[in-house]
Structures are given as structure tokens and as C-alpha cells.
Length: 293
Image (cartoon, rainbow, N blue to C red; front, side, top):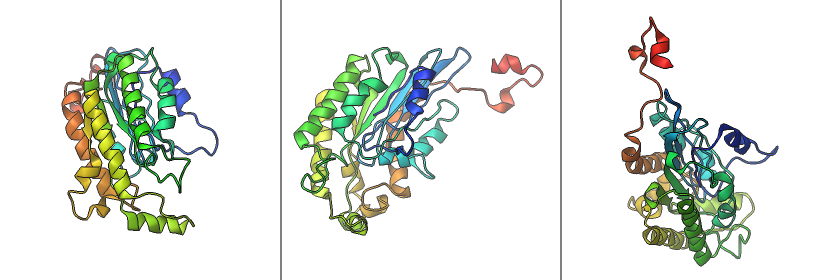
């Protein structure tokens, strides 16, 4: 899940984690962007890669203490590694926003909906949020008989997505600023190999993941939000395995694909945001205060 425009103190508290705790999520809000201009206007964009789910948040508003926390899965965790989609977006927005990754490996929508109000509170300035992405499904769709801890039944998964969208709306984040992202497809033979290497059986199947992707698309329609159907789009390429590093998690190509798809949806929302600071050639070197303060 993703959130933006919160205080630096709150953002700092979200950054803290217990010793040994992973920084990846199977939920999704994994990146945040904030920007300060001459009047400390803040623009935040939060994204989360997918390891099972993910969310993105973008915010833009005058706030003395700008910030945007997000939560996500392994996909969110890995999104800021080299060639990750979060890193790609952060680079594109470096002169407008800071990108902060929040990832907690293995989470599902059942857990994510419980913590969302802690990440985006009623006191959060909704005006500062340009976009929020919700990226879940890879963990929820784990087979119940083989992975009961992460599995969430299909109907509950859809209800949880609706609950999160409704919560965001209740804190004045409108539907046009929310983007749902489906889980990517599963390359079963590659993921089975990864499972067997750990002494496990194949815990997911692509057909089941597809049902969760379809449910995500349906929720978006019912709630009036945008949706990025990663499961369908990636399979338009016959060899979609190239989008995945181990059959489940995104490869470099998969990260690039997700980044491009998200950017096409975010570019218009972000085009009006001013640059954080002027280009160096535009700074008055004889009086830098006039250009920078």
C-alpha cells in the first residue's frame, strides 16, 4: 500500500524496524516521494513492487513536514535494487520527489488492510497525495492446502481490496488517485524449481493467480479506480518467463515493464509538479540565495 504527505516524525517511525525484520512486503506500498519547494510544498509518490502485492502513492501539497510512507511485498522490497522499478521511478522524479521504500516480505491483503490506517491516518493531508497504488495478490493466491498462512480466499481478497479503497476514500483520497495493480503471472516450472530447492512443493499456480488478477480488475471497476492488469499484459508476450527472475518475482525486464506501465499512468498526474530545485545553470552564482531559498 502506499501513502504520502505525512510528518517527518511519522515517516521516521515507519522507517524503524526490529532487528532482523525483512524490508519487503507482499502487500504493496513501497515507495514514497516528497518534494520541498521555496514554500516547502510537498509532492509525494508512493509505490510498491510486487512480490505478492504492491501499492503506490503520489502526493503533492503544501505541507511543512512532507513525507509518504508505503508498504509492499518482496516486489516492493526489490523495486529499489539495481534496475528495480521503484528505482526507475525515483530517478525519473529525482528533481520533484524523494522515493522511500517500505517493504515487508510475505504480507497479504488480510494483514495489509489492518495496518493501512496506521500508514495513512485521518490527519494525513489528502490534498498532498497525487496517487496511491495497491499491489496485492501473489501471496493471497498461494494454495491454501500448501501455504495456509499466506493464503486468503478469493472473495475475501476482493473484499479486502475494496476495504482499502474505501478507507482511502474516507480520508479524502479520491478514486481517480488510486491505482490497483494485479499480481503478475506465475511461471510454474521455474517457481517449482525454486520451491523444491528449499524442500517445498509448488505452492502457487498461474490459473489461480489469474483468478485473483481478474478479481482485482473487477474491484477497480466497481470502485472507479484505475487498474494495471499486469497478469494479462505480461502474458501477451508468449515467453512471459523473461519478466520473472524465479517464476514469481520480477526480473530486470519485468521491473522495466512494470515501471513503464506505471509511468504511463502517472506521467500526466505528475507533469504539473514543479521541480524541487533549479537546474544548476539557472542558479545565480553571484547570489545563490536568490535562486535556492
